[in-house]
Image (tube, rainbow, N blue to C red; front, top):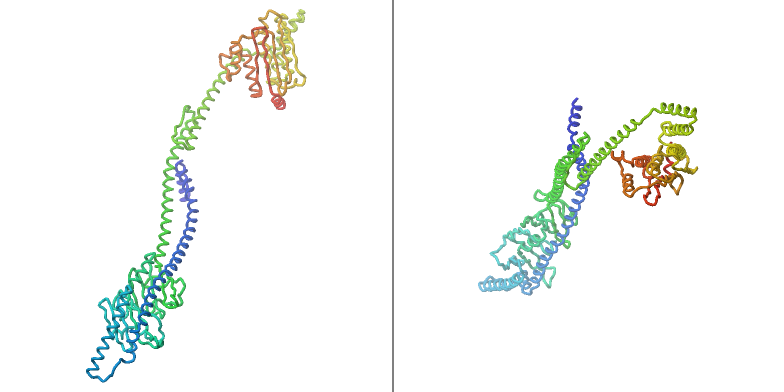
Length: 624
């Protein structure tokens, strides 16, 4: 019951024109849009995948660029320390310290003064050398040289000092002193660093003449600005980390959110050697990072990471924006559909209302629609059709009126044929008894004429029957007019059985007698012929009567050109010819025509020709 009730309500709701149009428009919008959504989703996934691959490629490019910058910084430090360790004075001072100093060790005051003087000279010489190198190289906070006895030679631009306690706590010096360590070692939070904005770099100093002998250490404190600036330059997505891990994987520094931090121990759970050259997604500070790890010249590891949440958010934002755009477009389409439905249904409603009124015979109904669309064209076509239909109705009414006139006139002259036959037969026998040959001839001819005219109700007879009727009719008229004219009939045998409308030639022959021969003082001649000319059957009625005046001929031609019989023309003298013309047009249509030639001067008389296509007559013959 509930389902039937809902279906009934839905059917009732769907009946209005605007709702039917709305539902169809919605279907036209929703179905293609669902297909479009599937295509968009597929393209979007492909685009997101392409975007992710583009980010991965960018990470490789940024890692390569940052690695070049870091290698350049460490290369500069390597060059600086190389120049320092080959200095002859540096080598001499460090060797002297390695050999236990110079001079006697008696402990006398003089010896102590000499030792202090030598120490002062060494300190002054070393500070001078280190100062020269520090001033030449940018971003250098301090340079320190430490001999094997722990003597510290320091040159600094800041209030920076370190002592033997700091050296004892320094993991960096312990790493450099390790036999396995060669080259540079670095740290950003060592006991020797003492500044959050510095990186401490240290290396061994070997003797020039004894390359395997360690005679001291050089410690350089470098500003982190150079490293931070390099990482900042390549922070393309502003959600990136850059990091450096030493070869032993026990010291690291990371650039994150424009800050440099460092530490000791394992940074990631996996070893850097296993991650080298691959895209990974390790955890750092509670977040996942899409990371590229590459080893620089088989030593330290440089890694570049992009926040995985940022990648996910970027993809989600791209997806949301596309969906929001699609939803906006869908709602816009629905809104336009609703608005268009109202406008369209209002215009179609006007058209429907006008058609209903016109269908209720409320003549004169018209519709006015604005615009240049198809509905306006339909409205204009409806107006044109309505005008045409109303014109046809007017013509039909006029034809019905004329038809009633003809019917009334026929009724006025209608005679019971059996009564007429019996009467004519009685007159014929009375004439025979009284030996009145002309009377009997006329009555016999008239009787035959009526039989042909009635012809058992047929409207179409053969040309042979039509010519026979004309022969009888002219014979009767010849007796009536006391031999005042002669007539000739000539019908080609080939066309004798072709069909023709009944009483087509009789009115024309009657016109020839009444209007042509009757007022002629000389003896008249009437000729009726029928024959084939090319592809036409030509019937000709010719007389030598008085002819027509130009104005009479023009009037008759205008009457033949008229499509509808007016009441005035029905009673006019040209009615007989127009009647024949109208009947032949009804029978043969455009394959028939009538020509008229007449002149009142020269006594050339009047000639009427009826032209009918032979194919039309054959078609009618086979149809009967």
